[in-house]
Length: 214
Figure 1 (tube, rainbow, N blue to C red):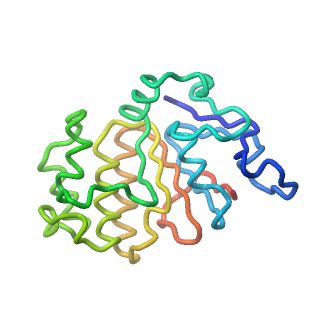
Figure 2: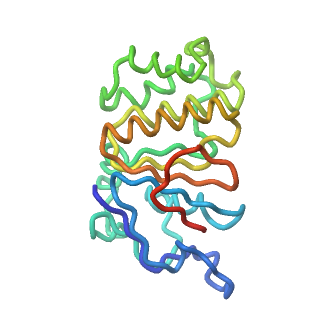
């Protein structure tokens, strides 16, 4: 997939509002593969909703979202499954990890679908993120910041054209935030992919091709 386009998109919950001042909502916006984007937003302005729309998890909006010119409202379940398996990777704000599984098991759940990374590669990522000692620890016993790093690794162990990251460093210090940014950048560059990252104030120090105000 080379492009994601929004045309006049607006969450239904905002339909009656007359004070929408946004670079995204009700606008014509295109996100292109290979670029890096930051969406700056205040709480309650719909950033998590935007990602849910792009993943096909929700359809409570007006307007049109297109992937390479195809209206996603017409996608079948199998088409959405293929998009999420091969084209869209997601780091959720709420992480959506399995607390009863270990950190490695959480990452391998995704990796085993495609065999995208070797276990040695994944372990090196754990080391770079400073959580090598947590590989076999159950996620439910880890701090939220540690869980954020596990969730990033799970997002990266698949083919993707667009990496979506919803507040990926909200609970990390600057050093760990920088390492996460490096990993995202390296893997996106390797795959020629775009990064679409949201923030309500704290975001990685990366070069952004465009900054949108939601």
